[in-house]
Image 1 (cartoon, rainbow, N blue to C red):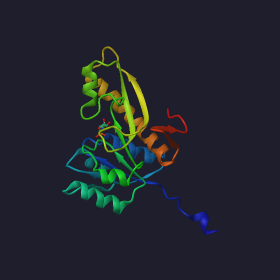
Image 2 (cartoon, rainbow, N blue to C red):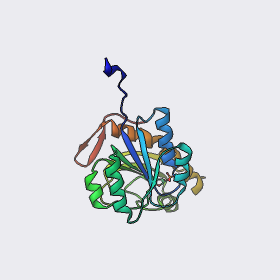
Image 3 (spheres, rainbow, N blue to C red):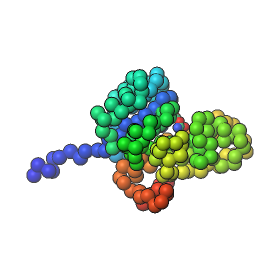
Amino acid sequence: MCGMFQRRVLPRIVVLASGNGSNFEAIANATQKGLLKAEIQALLVDRECFAVERAKRLDIQWIRLEKPWNSSLTKYLERLKPDLIVLAGFMRILPSEIVKEWQWKIVNIHPSLLPAFPGMHAIEKAYNYGVKVSGITIHFVDEGVDTGPIIFQKALEIKRDWSLKKLEEEIHKLEHRYYPLVIQKVLEKKWKIVGRRVILEEDIG
Ligand code: GRF
């Protein structure tokens, strides 16, 4: 009888950001729409950034990491015990202890088709290189810079007349659409590892 009234507990995620926070907001919107069945426990930031303004508007707890930021991060992760750590424009390399402790529980999004253009300013680098196809990559985090096992990629053809600004807009649209969907699959454990390959059980989009 009691079981009928038990509330379903949603998986819990924390989002780490350092900048604009548009991916954080897309994830938050997806949780509100039920596209992503998860609860955002907190936004963690390592600096003053616009993502915090979004958290305030969305009424989501936000935490500014103290210095030294990596022990502060460890402390909050131990306290929050999230099911998944979501990097969304977090401008720091996670220390190897955190990466090891949370293996397969940290995801990142990168605005290029990795392994092309890792690191900062990926959209600009791809554009200036003159590639005809770019896209987004969502991957598990390992100890390298944008080197972890790839979960999902979406390619985007760069049209002849596109400006850098247009490419940025199109990349962000893809990010906002797909990051929540991929997070959902990861939380549902609808993936397996074969060698280095992450195989999703179902296609996304
Ligand atoms: C995104 O392009 C993401 O791929 C990269 O950093 C950017 C963050 O954008 N890792 P925002 O802060 O979510 O708007």
